Length: 480
Image (cartoon, rainbow, N blue to C red; front, side):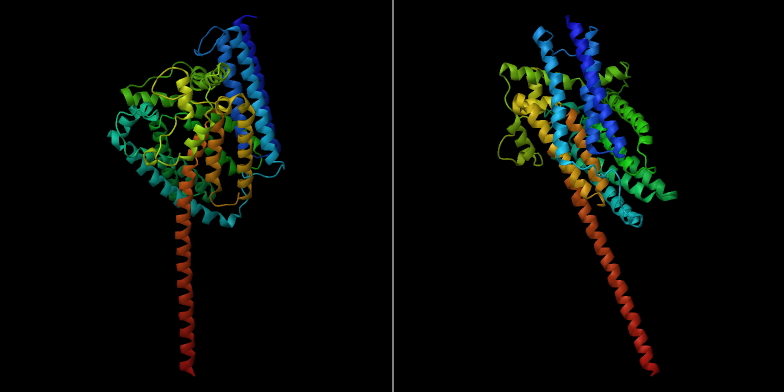
């Protein structure tokens, strides 16, 4: 069989996988009439291990070479079949692990169960937390980018900064972790908006704050050179919106959700044009077309898997689990405060495997990470752990679906979980939890202030009541 025939057949295999996984996810959503976090993981999996490889291998079968690091020898082609098989095995193990935790088909946190009388109090708390998070985010964004003189100058150097090769020493580099609270400010304000359903001037205030949060988030995404984060954050916002849907039947919203998903992908593609404008002062139109831009954005998922597998076959692979674990444990602490040198991240190790130096890092998908972390056995071990983690997260959140800030944590975990399918490294998961911890501190402060205010009101009310009683008693005594 010729090379192009093999590539075409491989593209068909991925198309079949993508269609089946997509159908399973949609069927589950319609059957339960809810959108679980794992449903989004399934949909993302069908995208990364269905649509993307189908498009790329189909184009490769026509002679168009986009995957320059691939080996198209006879053995190399057989390896591509094995990698497809690995993706199927990884999905199966991940699903079984998840189902072992979420055995019961019970209502999930995606359906809110809070008394309407409590909505006003919840909206106030979320609104205040959203504003405080927005303030923290903007101040942190200013401090983080100040070393370069302006935000635009920072964006021009974003690629080098992300890879740790910035041209200027930035003593506030660690503040980036605090900038990550900006998406949570949007989650909180959006949730408050849905709980209160404001009208008139208050509605305008909400929309203005949401617009301010959106702007801050977009600049954060561009400054961190993480365009695809637009997609993850957008899907989290979409998930929160679906929690507050007016009509019970979720099926009516799926088409709208698909359209919004397409818009989010397009926005991710256009982010590159915006960055180019900031860097060079000219708008570069994306003429390649949506599909070409899409495959270009996500083709790393295939090349990283091939590179990891070839490294394992050749014996050049150095197991990265412990290095990734060290990066995870120390992820919340600035490097300069640590008494030892942090090993390279998994993504940097993956980039070095290509033998190139572009000043950037190449992410790894779930299957590639599995091989890098544990060798070939990782295709079983890592998805097993990931499925268990998602299952435990859903179970914990289901038990706390009435918590005031459930929307925010739901949004955070939606974004992280789907990210782990395409842009996977253990340390990224841990670091991404820091803004949730920071928001938790903000919420505790807000709750404490509200509690003190309510106690003060109660004390004043009691004092006034006692005073009224004393006055009545004195009046009665005089009359007697």
